Image 1 (cartoon, one colour):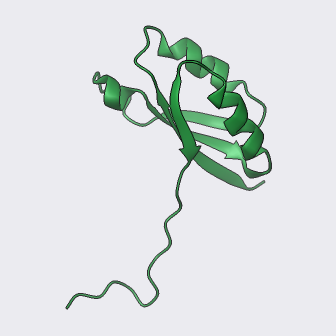
Image 2: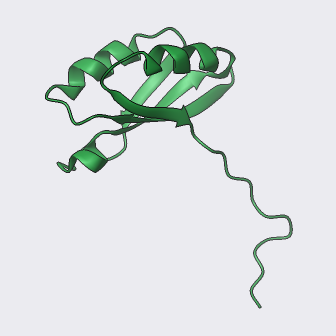
Image 3: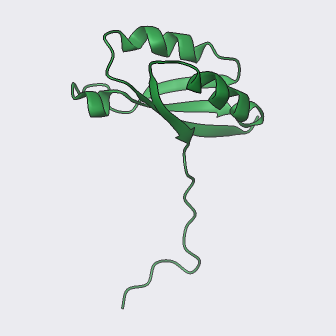
Length: 89
């Protein structure tokens, strides 16, 4: 199964764990991981990476965006290495 990573930003809410449990039960989601679990700053503690089945990623995005506690969710941009490596002048 091919997967796709999504980046999720929650609003500053009182009980983010309940929202994450709800989101993690959406069909097609494989894993939800908090990016900065030890951080208490809402700007960082509300960031998550979601691993989803790539064949269901559109449905997953639509379902997550319906949650009022979600500030933003988008497909994590992939990085490709430069051809020939980096060049310094």
